Image (cartoon, rainbow, N blue to C red; front, side, top):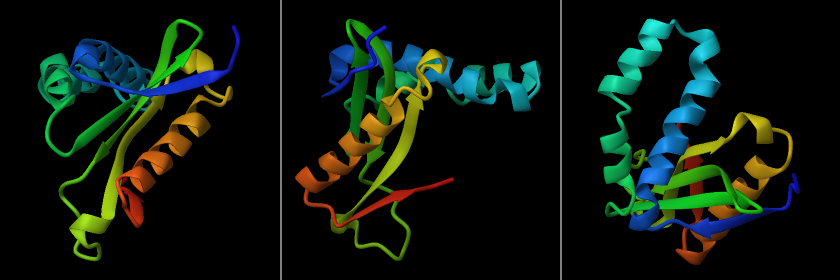
Length: 133
């Protein structure tokens, strides 16, 4: 597979695709360090497909999709709400999620998504980008 990654802004029409990628990549990222029962509970109660779909296009949210050739291979989301006290709300944006399909890890997808997040922050006039762990 060609590892040239293209990033584009996602819209409401991409909500189901993002929901499916988000649940799959979350599971792939954390299943090894959790029980199957805990993963299912979280996915079925907190990280539902419906909740993920609702976040795409919600006020203050921006989603980016990564593609290699014709295949979606990752996504990132940014949020312009719920800031730490240290930041001026108008000057900051949070990178909430940044995930790549397992088979694409180490092939530049994460780097391309991170750069797209930083570019998006600049385009929105943000001075600070933050991550919450």
